[in-house]
Amino acid sequence: MAEIVITNENFDKEVMNSDIPVLLDFWAEWCGPCRMVAPVVAEIAEEYSGKVKVGKVNVDEQTALAASFGISSIPTIVLIKDGKIAGTSIGYKPKAALLELLK
Image 1 (cartoon, one colour):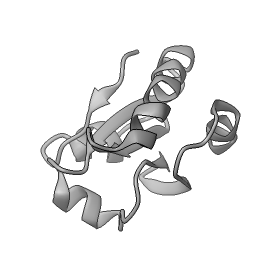
Image 2: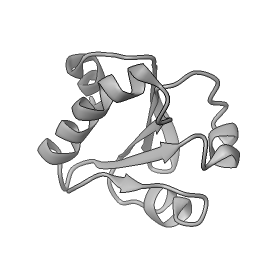
Image 3: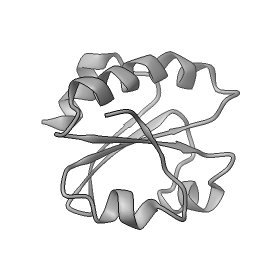
Image 4: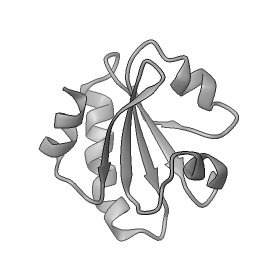
């Protein structure tokens, strides 16, 4: 499954009401580390298709959503399980570290 663009409008449907865990990538186009982690997040989206939903949140376009998570540094990866935050990773991390979040 490809990554999903998460907005205020589809957040409840795609994230809070998801029957599988959701990995949210909070990012911005101008952020170098965000561009470094993007291919890793895309790989996870493909490899864990059907087991984990991967959403991308552009912090410049979705300021209220980013604020609701207290995002102050990007990239920030947040795992949501059963509507609750199950883990967070701030800054660029290698794939292995992001996969640890899923365990």
